[in-house]
Image 1 (cartoon, rainbow, N blue to C red):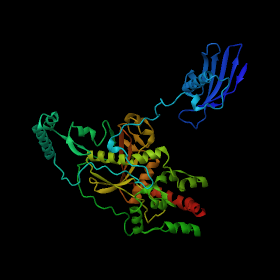
Image 2: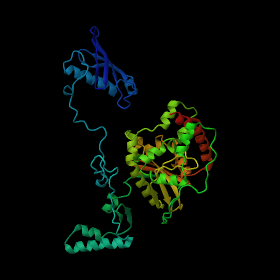
Image 3: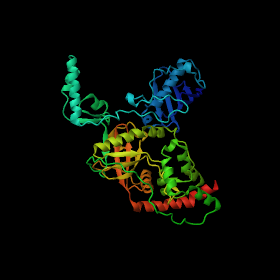
Image 4: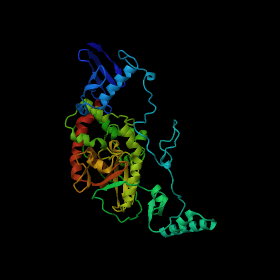
Length: 479
């Protein structure tokens, strides 16, 4: 019996390879890394090959599919053995050079590039000091007067008559035959069935919408959008609990602010993560994105406090990048869906909201929404889950994430999820009585209107205050 030691190659690691001359069997053992969870423990692969023909007598792998003797890890081990044999190796080298391996350029990308509309392409030139966002596309003439449906139809017929007077044009006949109902597009109303009706549709074809029963069909009321005044005048801060050290008083003094200062902070931090003011103001404060984590955790360690409090740059994480990249798209689809449901909503940017009554708490909603049907403002929180970006609607309903679906298909944000505590905190700090929670993907959108529950907030506020003064404030003072 002879032994052959093999080292790493292309993600597969051969431990040993030996041959039994009496049985005519070549035994090989290997470990193969997983294709998805590359940081997980690699699978062990065992092979038994006939020495005369090379046929596989037996094969096993630790993966679920390998119990039947056939899986991609076994195939990878076999292909590696064949490659070593073809290259004339008596034993495997530590590593093969790229010229000794088969060419790779014919292999397509793991994730293909999906087509997109030309108007959605980002044409910016990457350069230092360039714009943080692409220039917006203006698909309308702000100087033109809005036409009624009949006037728009008459203009189409007039264009058809002009074309017909110039000669025989098939398109002229199409324009003259235009009639019937019109549909809203990105360029305004257009005849149903026309090219604009599907090329510039506000929502893509086959797009699925889930609307919670808390949002009733509206009457498409149009009203002026009033200004939102944050924080009620005359509210005073309650006495602070306990006695504090000099360092703790220093931290508390730094985060104190008046109503005017709080309004100025919200106004000048609307760039959110792109602005230095937003990052500085969040320091030493407990923000709404962590409320759910704080109220559920019982014991805290120094490491746990550091992970919660110290800022981290997550903009290079792929799910975070996907959420940032698609947030504006999700807002546009939210507006289009709400308008089609009879709710003329107006979405405004929002900065860091810090209530002077409790300046140790802060929140940054994705937007403030004015709904003409409610005649009031609400908060908007948008989520674009990377794990569901290409999912079909029926598949998404079966997946476990922040939304839950009842027996009749009605959706609701899971009240035990951290996102619910985030939305509740945003409503409390902004003074809004409702908030729209939106989950958006490529092929579907789910919207729930959550109404503010003061009793729930009071219970949560007690836990947040206790955590800040008993755990977070001493930790900040020790830094």
